[in-house]
Length: 188
Figure 1 (cartoon, rainbow, N blue to C red):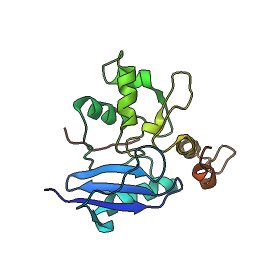
Figure 2: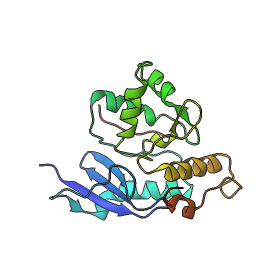
Figure 3: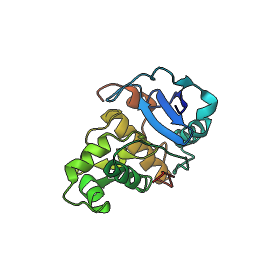
């Protein structure tokens, strides 16, 4: 059996749980929101094994990293993997619709299936599913909750415009209140 390690990372959007194996980062879990889980029996808490991901996520939240360069090992169907790989191509500070994402993977009629795969993305933030929005520009569901999605989009927009502390800049308090791009290496 392969070793699986986890660690917890405090961020402006709450604690994230990072999960990896020898091949790369497998999952990022939000402390709150959908898809919450506990580590499986036999997993090892190993901050040193997750240092590679921790550092890049800390840089992302500090506003000094706009693209991740991590070994990734998400587990999913071939269709899900295609959707998740395309998520990694959405540029920092930009958004696309579910329909556009379906077109980009060559399945323009599969908008609902793309939405379902997007909702099952095991590596949010790193594979930026938060950058996918409704066709009318509305924010739609997000595993970390809509306040977290709003925070991430506003943070990226502010940094992309060079105005992290301007009028549209988010605060960590806003993201934590309930109810309120780059190259990725994925194995084929």
